[in-house]
Length: 115
Image 1 (spheres, rainbow, N blue to C red):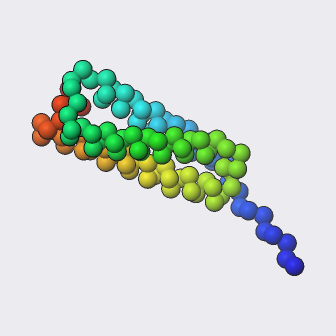
Image 2 (cartoon, helix red, strand yellow; image 1 turned 45 degrees about the vertical axis):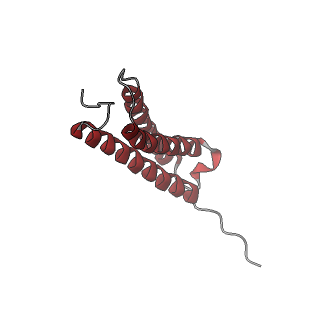
């Protein structure tokens, strides 16, 4: 019988840098949605689509922060999964911001982000 191979681990310093970057981007995402929804204008149906994208993307980013804070996040497989999940969340947030921006430029939504 062969001995089980130890799982590959990443350096904690590397993980900590990633956690810092993820936290900063999550903070930006939360700041954006907070600023956007605190606008005194009324919501319209067209605002639901970008808000949905933003919320789903932010939930994924929060999940990644939680995963990176776990003890087993130093395992390379867990770290890689968290990194991929973060990129998916980041892309979803970017799509939501893009839709909100296009809605604003076209005058479709009532929740302006340009001013």
